[in-house]
Length: 431
Image 1: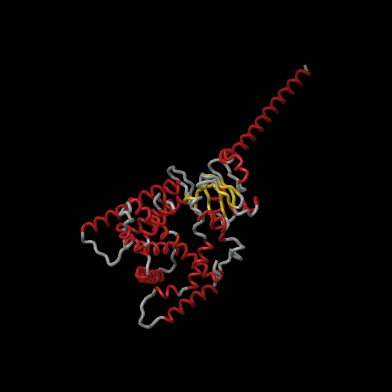
Image 2: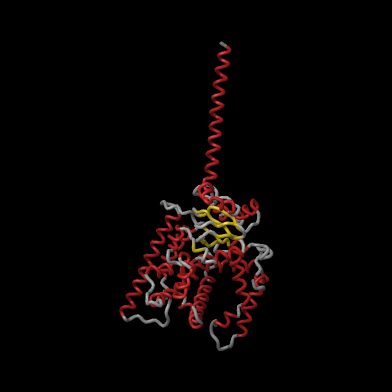
C-alpha cells in the first residue's frame, strides 16, 4: 500500500513536472517565434543575401523598433535610440531595423547618406503610406525626382528674384516690428506660440496674400492636430492622434479648396487685380511645355506643405536661435555687433531693410545654420530601394525602406568637434 502511494505520488509529480517542462518549452518556443518573426518573414526569403545585411535587429512583429524609438525621442536623450545600435553592433554607419511598419536600413554617415539621396537609379521616395495620407500624395516628399524638379520650378517663381524678395522683406520687417512692439506691452508671453503666429502670418501673406485672422486661426488649429499625428504611430482608431490628424487634413483640404475656388471665381469675373502675384496666382497661371496646368490636388498639397513648414519649422528655429544666443553671451554680442554695423553703414535717407543688408548678415546666417544643426528639426527622410544595392559591403534589398538619419550626422564628433556645443563659428570652415 505504501509502495503504491509512493509510486502514485511519484507518477503524479512526474506528470506535473512534465506538464511544467512542456509549458516552459512551449513558452520559450513561442517567445523565440515572436522575437524572430520579422527576421523569418523578411530576411530568410532573401536567401544568401540575408548574410550580407547590415547589423541590427528587426524587433517584434508590427512594432519593430518603434517603442524604443518613441521612448528615446520623448526623453531628454533622443540619441539613446541609435546609441544602442552603435554599442551593440559597432560604428558601422549602416544598420537594419523595423521602422514605421517596414523592414528598414538606417544610414548615419555623410557618405552613405549622399549615396542614398543622390542615386535616383537605385532609390526613390519611400515615405510611409500613413505619412503620405497626412501630407499629401502630390507634396514634394511623395513624388519622383523629375516631378519634384518640375513642381519646384513651377511653384517657386513668386518667392524668387531680387524684386520679389525686396517686396517681402518690407512686409516682413513691418510685421516683425509691429509684433515686437505688441509683445513688449504684454509682459510675459508664450514665446513659441507667438512666433508660430508671426511666421504663419508671414507665409500666409506670401502664398495667399491673406491677412485674415479667422482663416489663420482655423488653419493653425488644424495644423497643430495634423503634426501630432505625423509624429504618432499610425493607429486609425477614434481617440488616437493619427485618426484625429486624418480628420484635420480633411478639414485643411476643405479650407484650401474653398480658397482656390474663390480665387478662380475672382479671376474669372474680370475684376481681379493685384500689384504682385502670390503663390496662388503663380500656380493657377503656370503651364508645362505641353500647356497643361496644375490640378487643384497639386495646388492644395503644395499649399498644405509650404504653410505647414511656415507654421512648424520656422517658429521653432527662431525660438531655439533666441534660446541659444541668450545662453551664449559671446555669440549674442557678435551677432548684435554685426546688426549694429549694418545700421551704422545705412544712408540717413534709407528707410527699411534692403536685400543688400540682408546679405551682409554673415554671422547671423551661421547662427541659423548652427541652430538647425543642433536641433535637427527634420529627423530623417525616407527612401526606398528600387533594386538590390550594395553600400559599404552591405546589402540593401529591393523594396526595403532607407532612412537617412540626419541627427546622427549632425552629432558626429569627427565632423563637428564638441557636437553638443552651440558654436556658430564652426561654420567659418566650409564643409
